[in-house]
Image (cartoon, rainbow, N blue to C red):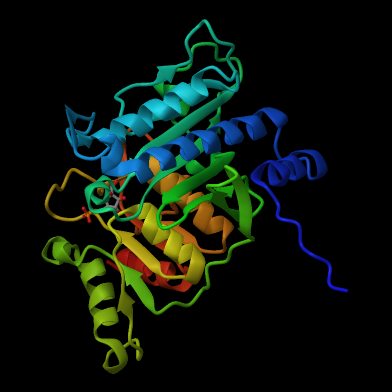
Length: 338
Ligand code: F6P
């Protein structure tokens, strides 16, 4: 008789990691469950869309000077409200807010720092394409009682957990606590996150790349060289054809890479020479790099491992090359040669 496999819930997965493997403290488990609950609420708001007046502009700009969508603001508030009272956190930082959000004194304080991009891929909101939430967890340095920006300035190697939710045809949560990468699907009938994949692997080899080709004229020579070789296909130096995909939401592109491999690139370019890229180190690049490395892939800024970059500000930007190891190493080597 074949044994039926009982579905594993997010709670069960985290309890096993905490109790049986001793890899995370109980407080971190509880924090991750709260983050997952907030993502569930954001998923609900996203799926109501126009019916609940969720689409369109908020009429405000964020700290980066970008126009906020209503859902950017709703997702940010949902994450703040869900996480401020649980007692697990010392402070939060969000791509949508200028400074550190300290836990109000009326609530107990914990020892963790939570960083998030509440709604990644905002330009996809109004066209009903995939969007998501990205998060990362750090530890407040010992002895600190009033968390400030400087306490968040830790390289990605110090992340205790990272993950993202994708609000696509299904709502998914993809998570790492340093023990590989696990994937959960939200069962919208029961409201529970059910494991639908564990120990995800990014293959070393790939035939797929992701980059916004409309910026090609602004790229630096190593990126031009690498992409030109891919585009040359079977007749070029790579001797094979490559396919291209661009979701325009990092969560969507990284999720595809975690499912079947590929390389994602958002290089720095010549448009704004002072900006080292478009994506944010703390809210996007570090958590995605942690996930991709845990799945056997690699992540660099062209010259350096992303997770070893020392941040200098909450909203630092960085060039990103991540995904299948052999491709990331090749484009990184082209930068070094240059
Ligand atoms: O946060 C920035 C972001 O929306 C990423 O999620 C995405 O990969 C990228 O910007 C899309 O950039 P572009 O507008 O150049 O397509």
